[in-house]
Image (cartoon, rainbow, N blue to C red):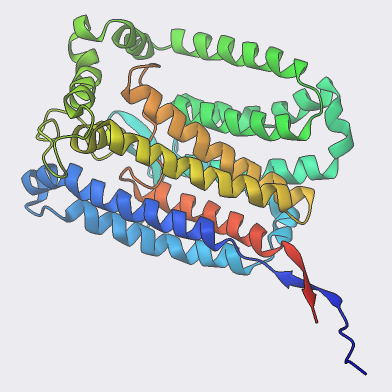
Length: 375
């Protein structure tokens, strides 16, 4: 008698290696472009062409610690600490205004220094908001179909958004954008979000009118060629993009990075990518981001529970909003907001917390269970 084959189902654990691979490629490309865009400035300023590169590599290595931690720890644990993390982020954002703690750079106080550690609390706030909102929505998912409940959740964010906006309007816009995206995914209704969008635009217009230098950015956006020093960065960035044409001048061959484009390794690094690698290189970078966001969407759709899905949605929204804003700024589609390009622009604090968010997403992917057949 032939041996009968028996089948039984067992749950197999999952880990999204595809997303990890895309992330590694994006980071590697970012380091190459960072060195290319910063070597001239680093040589003039520090006498070391690889200064910014080494600092960025250290930040990525440091970011591996929280990334691995978030992968290893069950993501459902963070439900218990959502309120605490939110309060901690609010206090840290407020601390930038305390003499002795706040550090001023480029006429803005956005950093705090505690002993040898110096970082931007607003970057931590992005991660905190994602965890806090995922916890809140997970507790009342069926109540997200009412407009008043959506507004109540947004009102919870007013204190921290107000503190952030006072010194960094662009980060406050990103935080609100993350919140709206998460609520949009959780809510079965669409109409309330038209009102929320209109209110957000009105708030931004009002906030811009309260500071003259923000009005100057609007002028530089509308007429960069006649705005003098206010439009200088925008014009130089556009020159870099235009001169790259289809395939660029070649890696390392940028002329605009030689002191012409301010913050060429920071907010304006996409212009150097366009100049050196052309439209082809720019499209490749955008495709890398799209692939990363696609893997996040797959993880969110297959997450074990609503909390995990919302966490990934929040991180996905953060990356998407920041990429869109950065590219829109350097192409002069919107006024200059000072937003970095994730994983590519120079910035230690940003890198560490972006790596933390990637760890959170990969941690959610570990919670996915696949049904496999075993003979």
